[in-house]
Image (cartoon, rainbow, N blue to C red; front, side, top):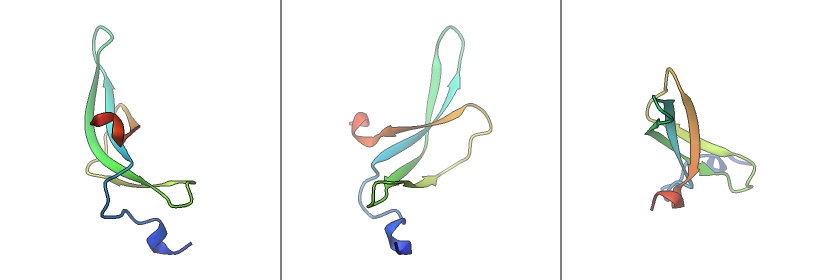
Length: 67
């Protein structure tokens, strides 16, 4: 595997990264914080985060779900 096999491509990401924080009364707050591209071999991801959350969790969702 070469370094270019794991680098994000110019193509659209396969997944979107969100920070998820729990709110009051069963409400969650989702904030988009980055994107991910699946590796060609299907065994991993390259992740680009625009920020790193200090609380909550990171959730990766299929990019197609956002359209």
